[in-house]
Length: 589
Ligand SMILES: Cc1cc2nc3c(=O)[nH]c(=O)nc-3n(C[C@H](O)[C@H](O)[C@H](O)COP(=O)(O)OP(=O)(O)OC[C@H]3O[C@@H](n4cnc5c(N)ncnc54)[C@H](O)[C@@H]3O)c2cc1C
Image 1: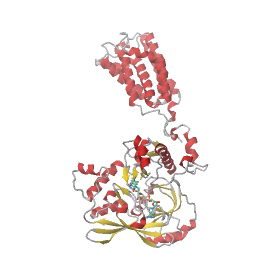
Image 2: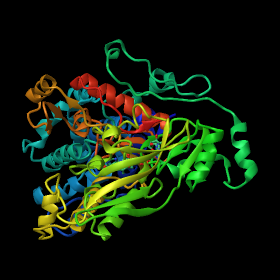
Image 3: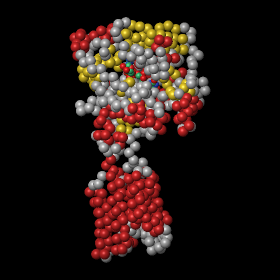
Image 4: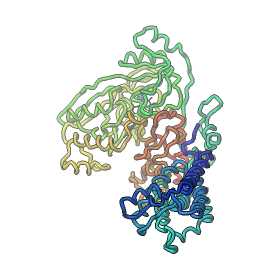
């Protein structure tokens, strides 16, 4: 297992010695050829501001006027090249090649009108790059290297000034300037201090592996003492009620094909390759009842857009594919629409817009199915689905009775409902009844950048379609598309904190965004995560999205436990910095 940060930066290899050795050897060979065969390559040196002299940018570093000149360049060149290759391996060749060309070009521009030859420009380039890189990166090992370099070669600094007309001080100055510029340009590439546990070379033994038992099973991290009295932790509920016989009666009937050992990769938007022991798609209520009469402990799956699978599902996974949308009743002002649980949410939103039924346009492009929408009371852009839910039809897993639950009884809250609390795992939502407007739609355009986007389009009185179009545009630009990069939207809820906690943070961060919710303060979790430096960070294939820190992503082959590990690290960091414990929005299995 290889940590994200490349711990091989400081690895010694034959290349570290061979390249400087052959480079210097080549200079000596060129000099020997000149002496031996009476050539004078000096005329191919760099001659400022002439077209012929341009060739010297590439040739002059290999030419030396005498033995003393060659020797005085050979030693620092060898040492500094070795340092470059050892400490900055990833960018060493870029610095050497690009730096040599640029310093030559600068000398060609600023140099006096005579021939400039010798590798001393490169010596200054390397000296300057290594010195400034160590300082800029604030990495103690590289800062120490900078000090060594200044100790060894600090005296060279004077030769960048016109104190001796016989030397090409312009070449030295150019090398020094280009070295500094490259140190700034490449400051983010190559070695940097380890910020996170997993970046450390010996990290796997210290941190990550500790989270697995000898069979590779995930062991949730033990809570630290300081966190002991915190109200909620990420918990994983594994149910090992293995009983294959439960599937047998259904299999016998052969009506609903139950597949065994099915990968769920395509069925969860995080793209986690967990397996279902058995899998069935259910398209009508009777089949659902039949399954539940045999086995109540099933795993209900909607669009899989609000779950993180950290383990195989040792149960029958029931993909709820109940379809249909129908108008139950309507009057002049309102329409009551019942949508079946398996309807895709966004397609349902588009259907309401097509029919000019208002109320859920702000919830456009939220992934998942209608059946899950009441569970966490989905919300976006100033609207929550509770505002338009009339009632929810549920099937009680125990009694197998259908019950119509009025809005009030659903106990909706911020990303919360009775389905996440008291009724968790005991009911299946089979359909949802929405009360939508037919006229006098309540246009909500004040949230986020909706207004600006409407202005850009020159829309003053937006329709529900305008709002939907604008939100689709904003979301597509801001959020990663799960089809391209695995994710489950916001991983954490935005914390709602007491005034004292808010004020405490606000003192240090007066630019902190927040929303007042009654007496409480809602702080964007993404902002807190960003302040802890996680935005754009990556741990193997698990990462924090680079545009939206609240979204954890799967870059390809991350496992659920890797994403969970990252989530726990983020929670710990936010807790330590702001004394706020983030709650997960995503369901973890
Ligand atoms: C890119 C992206 C953006 C998102 N943006 C938002 C957003 O803006 N606002 C927001 O609120 N959410 C957002 N989400 C989260 C997610 O889309 C919603 O929570 C959605 O309602 C989940 O629906 P689902 O069908 O995919 O549920 P699933 O992930 O399939 O299921 C979630 C949980 O509900 C249970 N469940 C599902 N259906 C039923 C049912 N019919 N009866 C009983 N239990 C059931 C499952 O067992 C599971 O425990 C986003 C997700 C993604 C990937």
